[in-house]
Amino acid sequence: MGAREALKKHLLGEASQPPEIVTCAPEHTEGLAVVTIGRMRARVTLAGPDGELSLLNGARCISRWALPPGSYRLRDSRVETEQDGVWWFLSSSAGPGLKPIELKANSTTKLDPGVEIHFAPTVKRQADGLILAFGLQTADQRGQAIFRDGQRIIIRYQLLDADGGVLAEGPFKYG
Image 1 (cartoon, rainbow, N blue to C red):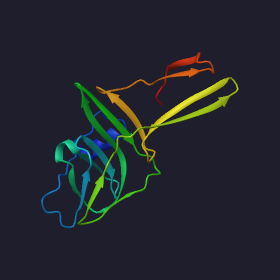
Image 2: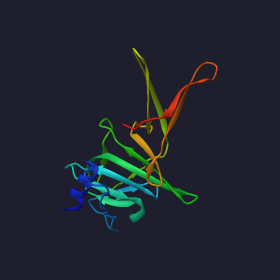
Image 3: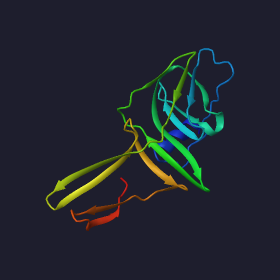
Image 4: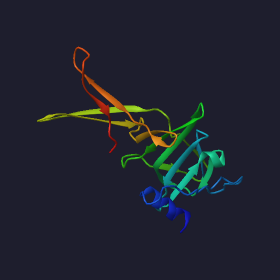
């Protein structure tokens, strides 16, 4: 199985680890599009014009790659950081509404996966009560998840009445 096939299996949930697909930009990039990522510990997956997937791993190439020119779509990104011996990462997945990224021959495009987190709550009324839901999103509305030491963190909620009394509380469920 090739690396691209393995990456496709990973994105479909059929494999736990993505393969390392790293095409570090050579010194001479005539006719190619150069891509840089604004963060050293970042990984980005792009879907190319032919549907092939490219995994750009910032820890491997000092964030500089060469790809064929064309229209690409961001599939997902992951930004990592370590604090006091604990590894945190922010994982983002792209929705279908994102604008394509146009990579032009003989030019450089900078991608920045971003680390800003936006809380997007929703409330729906039903006959027997309320449904509280929320999403974590980037500014361009890519879905996010936060992990600590490889585990998705539990986000808790409290619903308070006007006097500050707790009406309901517990962990939000993913999915």
